[in-house]
Structure formats: C-alpha cells, structure tokens
Image (cartoon, rainbow, N blue to C red; front, side, top):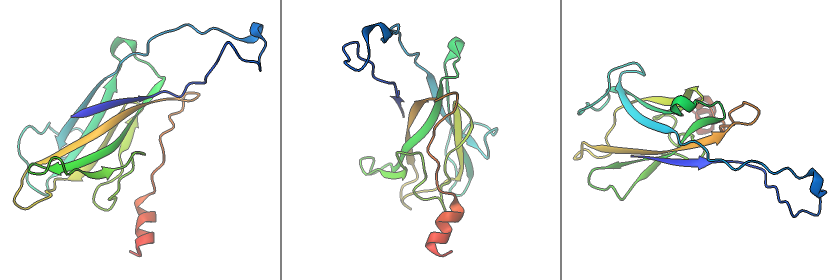
Length: 172
C-alpha cells in the first residue's frame, strides 16, 4: 500500500495587506495541481531484475522501487521523496516498526540503506530479504511518498548521514 502526501511550499499573499500598496499586489490564476500516478514494485536482484510476484528466501537480494509520472503533463516542478516506511509481520500488522523516518533516512543504515534517487520522480533501495519472526514468513512493507515542490529547479530532499558516519558513532 502506498500513501501519497503532497507538500507544497507556497508563499502566502493577501490582497488585504497593509505592507504593500494595492497596485503592487498580483492576483495569481487559480489552478489545480496535477495528480501524479505512482507505483511501487519489488525486483529480484537489482533495479532491472524481474518483478517479484511470489515468495522469496531470506537473504535473497531485492530492489524496492518507487516511481511517479504525470503522464502527458510531464512536469519538472516536483520531485519524489520516499519517507515514513514501516515493516510488520503477518501476525502483528498493527505493530509496525518504522525503518525509514519522516526525512527519508534509514533508521537502520547497517541493514537497510537510505533510499537513492535516480531522477526527480524515481527512487529505490537494494536490500536482502528479511523476516521479523522465525515463525512468520510474510513481511508487510509500507511507505509514504511526498511530492516536493522544487525550488529554482532543484529538489530539496533532506540529506541522510552516510553509513560511514553512523559506523564512526557506533565505534565500528
């Protein structure tokens, strides 16, 4: 299941402002932001591997991929950010474990890398299949997708600490 969360950072303009003369206030046209079409896929091995449609073995390399498109109205105004990912086993779906935080950074970088982005609207991560419980074989993986408004053509995704920094803090 994927959730879409749109984050638009727009300046607030009021025509009733005492700070600006009325002749300097510009009325902007009202429009609707286009809705993207987003998908989440899991590939065997790497990004170009076959789609996973059945069970995999613990330890098998997988690639989680997220991508969005605006179809015919392709735009360069937005970029995708994967965040707030959780995992849960089949038995305890209500007990979700957060593995990627609200900034899109892995909370367990030695096991699960940070999401990498190969374009404005495409991200993914490679990980080995894992299980949360020896008795349960299914793992439910759920993430949110934010569409960020680019500033001067630049995507402003938060930067995550490199694994090297995390290991130095842990004394590895």
